[in-house]
Image 1 (cartoon, rainbow, N blue to C red):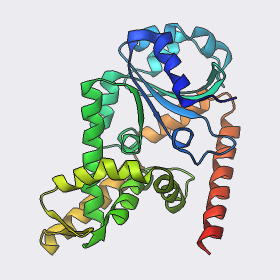
Image 2: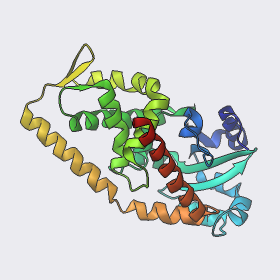
Image 3: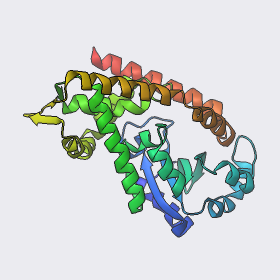
Image 4: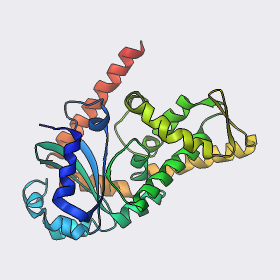
Length: 278
């Protein structure tokens, strides 16, 4: 049984100052929940070794493949570990990463981490460096979305493109159109607050009465558009996805069930939006 999102703060009490960042995201925080929805959060750590040492029992009994703290520490070096857990009556999906690795991955060419930071977030704890990394990821989304849009465009056009970027660079069962429509529907106001100021930072974008124009020469716009499409295509086939799939299989108690519900939920969501669109 899930509780209020504020209850995620118990993680700060449990792990103390070792948690330098606790970030919630996804449908449970901003509506559009499904029966199988859980709280998604990033746990960013000063010292992953201390965190894993405290979760020895979890790794022994709650993973698809029984493990131990030593093995999880090894797997977490330079990477993100994922766990499906239930604590304090809350079903959660943890992304566990060291602060240095989180920062590196937010600036990395691969979209897996920074693409998620471009979405609306609920920040329970952070550092200046974490906030700067998230802002850098969002500035990159702003530039890329503007590159891909034809001029002129509206703010709504921009937000749909910006929220599509991570899915364009990811291998997932989601329908991009439906997924992005869901995000815009539930968090459109938050996204406008985030991205309007960042869009104004681009000196080659002008705005008049809600219409945005790219003032760069056509040849420059075309080059930027092609470079961004190539960037996203390469990110989609990044070698890191093999690690993600293998890690999720080993750490989720019922990985095949998780994949089944993920696909089922996306099919139902697509059906819902197709009906509403008629």
